[in-house]
Length: 605
Image 1 (tube, rainbow, N blue to C red):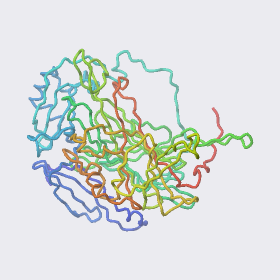
Image 2: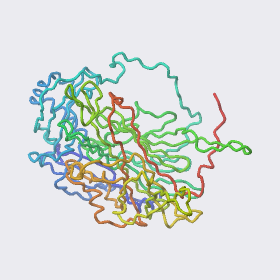
Image 3: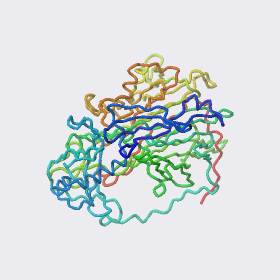
Image 4: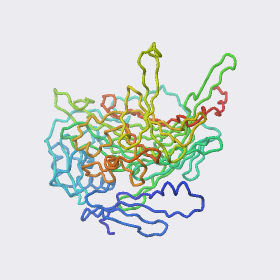
């Protein structure tokens, strides 16, 4: 393999669930890695599996008609190549930009539209252009509206200039760094808030094995998904009870809902096209955690296949979370327990956006997954005397387009064992009648989902619909199957014509929940190869067989996110927008599992 070969992804080929379940210390297991790579001369994409134990190629195959994921190396290379091109320099001069050191050219995969016929067969990038007011200032505050470049990412050849012509650029104030904000005075009425743990942490970290109170898990990391939670279990008395084999984010689809020239091609598949792991940032200098913190490094690779270490990629810490449970009794007195949670988190910078991902584990068996979005919104300018139809004005003649963030969580649950069934749960108010004269009766309906078609579910606010994963072969003290409930949050519809090229590429957006039988090869809900895809080869293709999902090893694909109707208050840098969902024990325990939490020390300062 010569210098024209590039690696899109190299990651661990994870052992099968059976191997993981049966493994004992000292057992010999062949370690392997999967690699996606391509030749920049002919554009052909390949995938291979390599034995790390035997130092040999196990198999390798050409994957015709697909493109590997984009790499950060290509992103920077395209930026530099375009800035040297005389046609680009001339186009920027027509827009009044002559200092190329102030120019940022931001390359996206061709997303919202199909690749034009004249560029078919090429590896195509589509760019935005931004310009800083001065060194160190915010380039995203100054879009060069109407100017975009189309580039061949293999040859770094400029294929096309899309230029609507110069416009009168507005005078914006898009700075957020204090020294650059005119008249900025920082607040001086904030006293220090310190979190201290004088006796140290309550969790143990042995390599990637993490244990805290009753919880145990293993932490993984790969270039595409970033952080992965493996073999999650809860110690219940003498038993370590499995809850999930694997929890991760499998896709993130961000369509911009603006058909104008600046945004029509702007749809990002941040996981499939780029990879959250590659874009994970070191928390060494920018961690938001307080208290006693432990970190894990992550190792990814560059486009040449060389390893790249991300120091402090994953943060692990404990947090106080107010009251866990409390009751005041006139005889027994007051019993109160403070809640504590374990937080495992990582941060990814996706060009102008930041995604902060938190998995939180609670003493009562609850699991919360929270995502926070912050960073800088994409903007364009609009003519004097008009209002933007597809976004909100955030500065002088400047608007941020409406857009959506669809996140897909892949939840491989094993509730007290591998064979589970998912039930749709709904509340129903019964009509007034002889047994319900005042109309107060409320019942809970539970409907087992038996096939993949039934497993395509949408949230219903009217019935407070949720989904409970039960193990029908294991019962609690009251004879009910043990279970964990997916409590939905941040659900919203796609609001998109099914014929749209974006929807055709990401049909996962069409439902809040999909349920499939476990298949180790079914990992990517919109398909394995997303760059320049035209059809969703993931969940719609898999579920066409309408396989059984009853009393088997199931995977839940939960779709949630942010319906981002932009606001002036989010400019020039966004306060975090927070969304989450929960996994809650539902009949998994016989009573409150946090009764054994001791009272907090009575200390006042």
